[in-house]
Length: 475
Image (tube, rainbow, N blue to C red; front, side, top):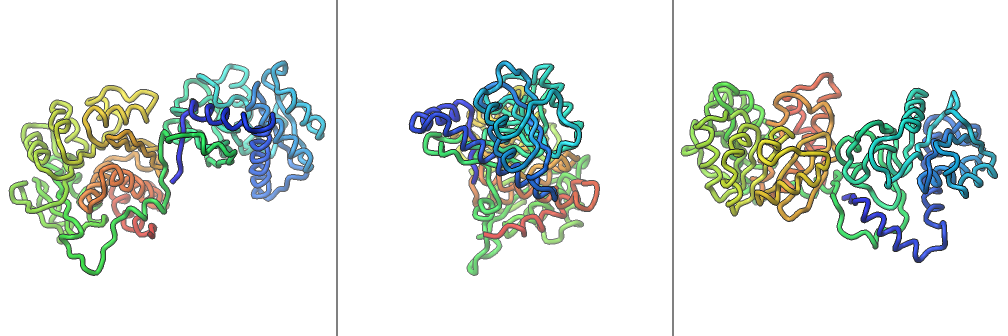
């Protein structure tokens, strides 16, 4: 598990550590880590540090100082380092002197033929997009085609919430210091940060509780329920799927197919897409009504269900049970008019809205996606999975996870139905709502990536890749 923090936490932790260190020690640690990562990139690109051309985009303050000191280290190893100063009068004096002493020089433009560009324009103290002169420099860097390495955060993104207002750097690699910043993990900031690598500065003991948790393969594999020799189909869990309609039978087929890729021992379907589900999946117990569905351990309800009185009756009946319930798509539209049906529940409830569905219930998401998801979970005493390129899962206790496996390939009709099926199956297998949502989103993302390897992605191809994606996880 990785942990991400807000800027105020980072500042407080850095101040606490710097009080115990010699002046400049923390900056030198950061510069050394940055220089090492740049050196690796140059070598991986079949070049070498000696003779490589490295351009620095340098702003005022400590972020620029980090870039300059790292540039000095690279220059001492034989790199040709040139620094473009956004504001020469405010450049970090010590860093600039170190660069010049090591053989680096100041330039007015990014040199043609640069092998790598370091973005040290602004750091975690920045607000809003880049100013015109800095934006022009960043645009010139992008035109070189050289890899861009951001210092701590890509310039122009909000490091706490990941918002981007105006121009911002799009980095290939972000070398961040001390801890992950939440803005590198969520929203537009995540898509502009590239590969995020952490340089440990020793501030961990001073950070406090993280703003967000980011799972990895080992975490998801450890959560994923595994059958044991004494299990039968009932003890492994039974997921009930109430989805689809005469108008949208495919939603039921997709959700049920994804549920079958989960860890439960049985899938029961209840709804009007009875015949398409039976034809596609003979192993599913399919009935036309909830009354005839039989015993289940959790429900996934809403995908393609419609929004009329019949759909509302299905949603209300499911929510009146004492079972965990996942609500998606049309179920969320119905819920917008009946929020007390969830607010007063004692059993776990997992909502899986995209931004527009979220807005119908809770109002606009806004720039701070982590805060929005937490606000929604607190308002309805439930767990909220806010879909996006970096899906967020907020639990009712305020804990928030960010899924790192998202891909733009999943932006296709029916993809959410697949997610509801797999996450619902994890609920039925006994996972708490937040872990079911996170694990479902994680494997859903992996499946999207697998599907994309074979060409354009459809929801059906994501569903078909779910088993292979889950099979990649090993406890």
